[in-house]
Length: 521
Image 1 (spheres, rainbow, N blue to C red):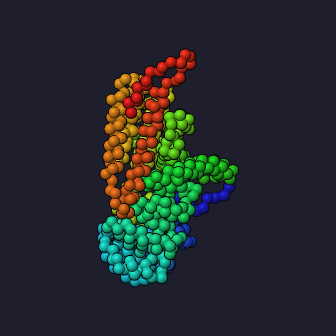
Image 2: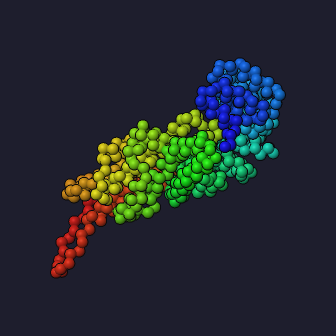
Image 3: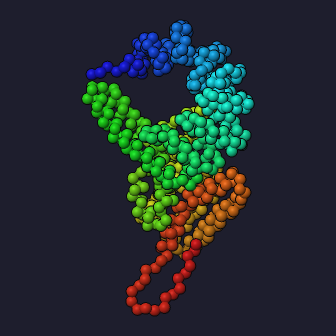
C-alpha cells in the first residue's frame, strides 16, 4: 500500500487532534518548498497550541532566508493584528510588488484592516495592484493613472487597470464607456479570464446578450467547472430570451453530474484495490455531500421545466407528454423549508471568487447566500408550476396549502413590477381553470379576472420607454423575454380550458346544431 503524502498525513493528524505531531510534520515541510497549504497548516497548529510567537520567529527567519518565497510573509500575516498587520502588509507590497497576484495574496488580510495608506506609485504592475487594493478599501481611484497604465506596455497591469476603471465607470452609470474600455482590454489580452468575465458582465448590462454569450464561450468552461462557474450566465441569459442556450447549459450540467457519479464509484474502488481506504472514503464523502447535494444541479433540473414550457409546450397535450419526465426530478417538499433544503440540496459549489473581490461591496458569504436564495426560489417556482399543471391536466392531487405557501413566498421576493404582474396573471389562470374543471358555470367571473391581469401586463409593456437609447432598448428586450417566459404556463392553462369546451361531434341524423356559447376568456 502506498503511503499518503506527508502533507495529507499531517492533515489527517490535525483532524484527529494530534496537533503536536501534525505541527512537527508541517514544520519539516516548510524547509522543502513554498507550499501554502503547509504554511497554513503550520499556523493553524501553532494557534491551537498557543505558540504564535515561536511560529512568528520561525516564519520571519524563513522569510529572510528565502526573499523570493511568498509563503513565510503571507503566513505571518495570519498571526498579527492592528498596526503590526498594516506594517507587514506594506512590507509585503514592497517585497512582492512585481507579482500579478499581489492583491489576491493580500485580500484576506485587507479585510481585517479598516484603512491603509496606499500611494499609487512605482512600476505599472505595482500601480495596478495598488489600484485594486484602493478600490477594495473604498478609496478613490485616480482615473488618470488608470489610463496611463492601460496605454503602457505591461499587458497584465493594463488588464487589471482596465477592470478597475470599468468598475468605477459602471458605479457612475457609464456602462457604454465601461464596455469600450473592456473591449479594448479583451482584444489585447484575450487569454485573461478576469478581463473576459468583466467584459461579459459589461455586455449583459447594456443588453448585448448574444455578444456576452459569445464572449463567455471563449472562457472554455467545461466538465466540473460547469457546476462551479455555470452560474455566471444564469442570472441574465434566461431573462434575456436565450432559452435554447440556457437549456443546453442545464443539460450539460446534468450530464457532468451523471459522469461524476459513475467516475466516483470507479475511483473509489481503485483506491480500495490499493488498500487506501481513507482516499476511498474521501471520494465517496465528496460525492455524497458535495455533488449529490449540489444546488446548481437542482437548479438545472428544475430550470428545464420552465424552459420546456417556453420552447415546446404550446398545448396541454404536450405538457401531459412531458410530465413523466419532469416528475423524475426533485420534490417540492425538498425545497419548501430551510431545514429540508439544506439537508437535501444545501451544497453550493459555485466559485463566488471568479470575479475579483474589489468588484463587489459584499462579502463572499453574502454573495453565496444570495446565489443560493436565487437558485432555490427559481427551483421552487418551477416545481410548484409542475405540481399545478399535473393537478390540472391529470387526476393527480396537488398539496394545495404547500403550493400556495411556496408561490406566495416567491411572489413576495420578486422586486420587478412586470414580473410580479405576469406571475399574478398565471396564478389567476390556475384558479380559473381549476374552477372551470369542476364547475363551468361559476368560472366566468374568474376568467374575467384573468383578462384583467393580462390587461395589466399589456399596460405595463405599453408604458416602457420608446426611445432608441441603449438602456431603453435593453429594457424592452428584457421585458419581452420576461413576459414570454413567465406567461408560458398561462398559455397552457388557456389551451386546456379551450380544449375542454370542444364538443365531440355526434354520429346520427344530421340536424341544426345549437350555437355554442362563447368561452369566458
